[in-house]
Length: 160
Image 1 (cartoon, rainbow, N blue to C red):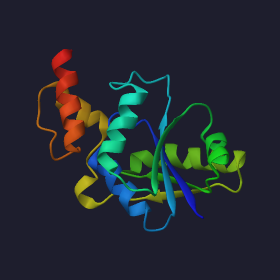
Image 2 (image 1 turned 60 degrees about the horizontal axis):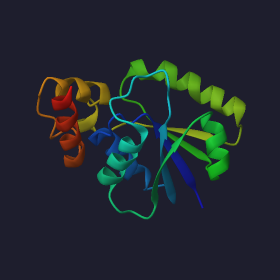
Image 3 (image 1 turned 45 degrees about the horizontal axis):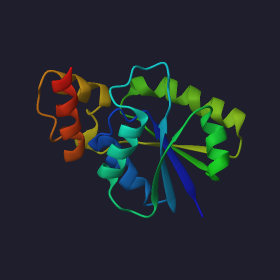
Image 4 (image 1 turned 135 degrees about the horizontal axis):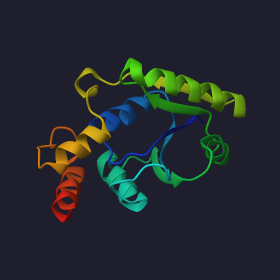
């Protein structure tokens, strides 16, 4: 059984993330969407909220699991029995950081393979930070995120 992990902060999950989730199911048996407990970023949504929004966005597919994790991704992957890490590459600017991370993860866990995926053309420009920014100023994010996420963003930006 081929188990992959798609890790990120998903603050919030976007149509770009969803696209990668669906397309990765073409070549993996099980996908764990892993929400990183990253203390260096000031998140808009809590870990629990992000997990719930991911579940809403990816729907009821038994092959997809949504979990949160702290610590090293390689340790989480070992614990879950995963052999693949899925990463999205939107732009050349993503590459240097992602490449460095992939090499370090391989150094820490030689059997763990990183797979870089290119987003579909219509989601390439979407990033969670841009979505947060648009939502903050009351812009329309309905084409960028799942309806449940759009609703949560509206609720969050009205309360701030």
